[in-house]
Image (cartoon, rainbow, N blue to C red; front, side, top):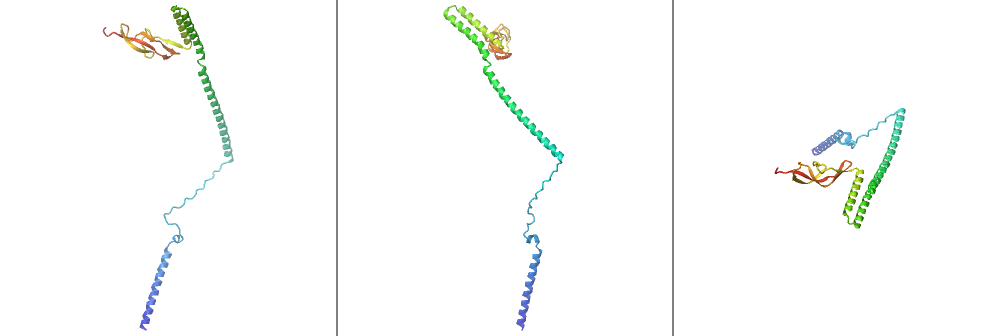
Length: 216
């Protein structure tokens, strides 16, 4: 009887401990938040941003009519701008074409006048072959030179004064300085004439300039 009684007590103790363990597990399970049990996202996870609804702007009928009128005027102004642009492009092309034509034939009149100079030179050469009078040849060449100067003068060409003038670096090009009794800086010899066209220097005079003798 004693052994059976002790076995019964052991079984009762085991049953009691098992019951206590089950009660503890049940309490822990109940303490877990419902969110975690349902598979909800943990704290700290980013939520998707909610889309903001675009607010609707209410426009009165009068305001809508005004906007339509302004849009119509804007289209008209744009069409005018396109037409003006096309007209300007045509004008630019016409001006370029006229400029090219002018550049091509601008020298025609001058060339025709210079041809008379060529005629004079040919006549002088022809005369020199028939006669040994070189004075006539010189006179013919001089006449030709004067004719050429007259023609070019009609187009605005002028000789630059040099001989006896004070040296001017804007109009003269000094090739040599000569020690002499003349005034310092005075042009004593002209090697090549200079010319200006309508007031603009196109070729300076090539000259020799006086320099006071250092022995004086």
